[in-house]
Image (cartoon, rainbow, N blue to C red; front, side, top):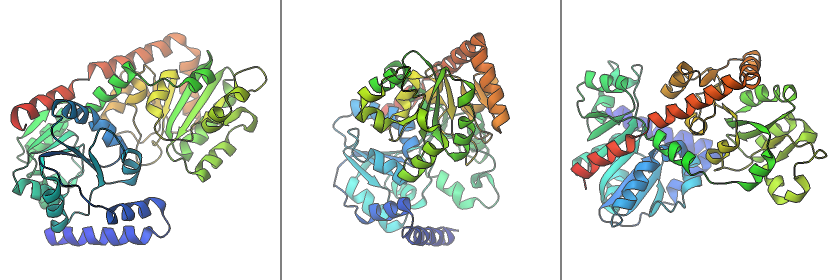
Length: 413
């Protein structure tokens, strides 16, 4: 099985290399791994994240360890360009790299240079050679905010190598009891039910959000519907709502912000009533709210604002539910916003729990979105109760970071 794994890794690299000739993300993936030159450290603390979402998820633990152990250098690696390109200059780390391709040679070279004292992976990403090299060197390796499903290869008859990778982990900190039972069922007893560190992250953000004066001015006392991390299928649904609620304003923060995608979104929305955030901030005096400008739709054409945007909203729509799966519902819920999302949410515990609390709502088409929006917008008490339930849900599920830190303090540093 290991031979197949190694062959698969190399085939994957070739496929990404071929894609790099016409795909920007693939090109960044290849280029970033060519340009690596590791700084030599001693006793570093290594955090790995698949992408930007996992970085934000694991951030509370990273920040806490950086504060408590300032003498240890922090090294961050990313698998995806969407994480690396946004956080490559983060002040939270002493060095940020793309994770090299998972080969024995790369793993040895990486560990030789960085000499990690411990390694922390967030949610997932199980790389045999990196895990095996950490195990061989007796480097504690923790997977935090982990979540497992019974349909994964770890729990299938053919998943021998996958289970072997899990056996190299020092400790799993899992989000839910179902994940704990699945791991226990294949002989993994080194499991702590800690919860999800995302709750800590989004709750801290909601308590002290970054203020955005241009958004406050755009809101100007109006009710606001915020759509975050949207894709085209989401955006077509939202566009259908706009004319029905002339007293509301709409903010759309698409998941992808290249010029072509932004242009298509702008063309989908009413031309005379829509403005991009870059236009709003470049000429603020020209676009101040008044009866004459009629700007009701704002398109966010940058990355990094979304987690702070929700403080200005009343209802949130979270994108991705018509594709691989919904994006982060908790960022909006932490601010007391009821959340709406598409039908592909089953793998996300928080979405199911928000629905059970009547703080989350799934829609599969335009008609259902209109019905849910009407219920929330036309029933003030229902809207208020849904928002309160969303906020309380986040607050009541904080604490994972403290559990993880206590274990690391007692066992590793």
